[in-house]
Image (cartoon, rainbow, N blue to C red; front, side, top):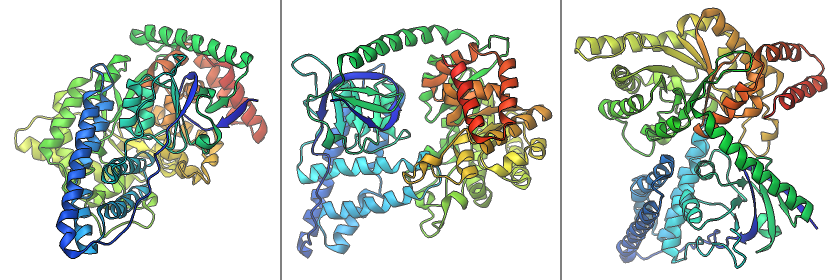
Length: 579
């Protein structure tokens, strides 16, 4: 009998294979007190374990294929850096000494404290970095407990069929090792689509499901299953008809990928002649290479937060300049760099100022306007990098004209300092606002007077408009990009930008999803910025669209007052334009 299991589709594609359940991922951490004269030995045992864990990760790094996406190596480097981080390593030693507890327990307590800090962050992407703490800690714990790592022996079975890995959760290092062993797909009970493991699975084009609660209990080893990473479900015990259907899907998907690759150097022009711009979202300097491989015409969002994380001090002007310079030099096209978008938490050396509600507190541009020394350093570095190529500065979480004017004043002051010092910068450097709170969208006509461009950050715009935390399992079903309020705010922003003669792009996840491309074209959007893996799919959706007709249809749909008719019309618009 067949069984359906719903989950979160973290990486598209269809896989068919036998289940290999990965056991031993849950750790039982002992707690016991140690004698005062045993503290030094216990600390030495912990540091020896940290060295061994580093060696394990370094060995994983050596196994990364030379042609693998740069972000894979970057994730392993991040975990290696965390193993040298004083906030994780030194404080455990202090706990061992002060509390007289064993290393495993001291590490557990410290990890829980750090994870709690990340869980309070407002930015859903940054919040998922708690997983990195958990992954690094688990590796250290296994070494301390002398437990063998569960990854291993997962290669094809006697029939030669690559297995579908079913686990509690997987680390980026696990993904790399399992990829080397030729697995067909990943299914985990925990994790989300923004985790590093999910990003890696997408980069390696391995179908993956996350949040498949109970999968290890329900499924049996060697049981044949179908994993549909796009639909977000698993089918166990498929009959012959189902297997034929999904094998046909696999063949169709392979043809589709070959067809997409041909579009790399094609312009994104709709069937009725409307030109759209395809940009990439980039997190690390090396990601710019991936953007170039898919023909991205520039970078619509470059996040700078990684420069400020996992360290006790702030990056210097020269350090930041070198990173920004590399990104600008690597891209043949405009590069939009977002200034620091961090929340009110301990990650920036503010241990005594944890906000009771970080999502609504001192974060992003609010933090930068309060910590002006921090902001000035970043602005000087950005201005210096602007002399190296086509660049734009984007300010996150702008909600008032006053914030925009203050930020521009500080930019002008930094520019004047550089001019006085004889340092080159782009004197016409565009400065724009990220529209991600309803107040900014509603005030867009006024805000546009102080901006050279807008960029819609739909992840937060939806969150703040609907008062929904999308990674909160209890309420994330209410997170709806197609809610009428959200679509009206998007249209208001685009209309305000057009009226003011400034460009409007979108860098949120809506821009990456080809299902929304016809609707966004209908709303008037022509600049899309997304993960490099989505560029060709969205381009194809643009090339097949009749934009004039979509704009008429979208206007009709937004005028509907009946909720059911509205939803049916939107679904119809998506179906009509499905590739």
